[in-house]
Length: 280
Image (cartoon, rainbow, N blue to C red; front, side):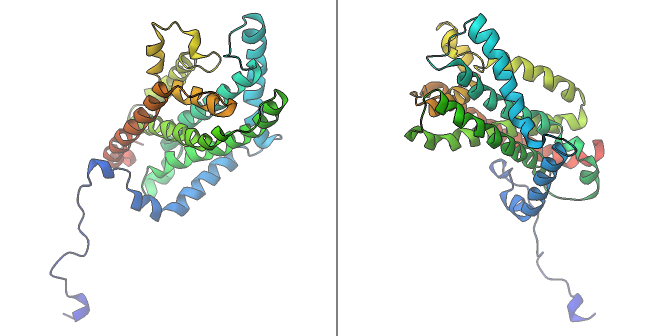
């Protein structure tokens, strides 16, 4: 046998089960980073393909919703807004909520939407929901463009607290990724998850301080609301924008819970990944 065909004494590659903390497989994600960019760019192109207004829809949706809520809740019902003019109070909550809900909805369906690719080519499947959630960040950035002139109109200027804005944006994205990964992995085998997700998101909307402040809830029941991670995220986002003091209790919970959920979601996703091609 030629020397070039002699097998080595020891295997060149050893495949071992990774630890739970390594479930994200960062090395694999970096190797396939070009695929990640391609999937993210493709999602953006497909979303606004054959539309007249294009990315303007990302602004119109929260803007029109803000106008409706301002009329009904701000003027008729007179919902308090912690001293912040209700239009920008509602808009700040709506853009954060729209980013989270869109990322969860699209991420939950991302595996099924890419079933043809999953069945034919190998790559870390976690790239699919990660690229989908990252694409919604572009929409979120567009909606923030309108927030700047609204804040100036109502007399709010830039302050030092703006340095924390990227922190809350990344935190929202990671939380949406964790929820989207869990639902998408479950939806591959059980399509019921796709029908339940819009219903759960609608309930989640009214349980979150999007169109009302958490101070509206009686103090005896406020702790229940603070168990919702979006409470600390949305109110922290408002505090950063409008120069208000942070309520650290819900904010710290909104940091700890998504991080724990993300690690758990990545671990469960990796375990279910081997059966995706079979059930999809």
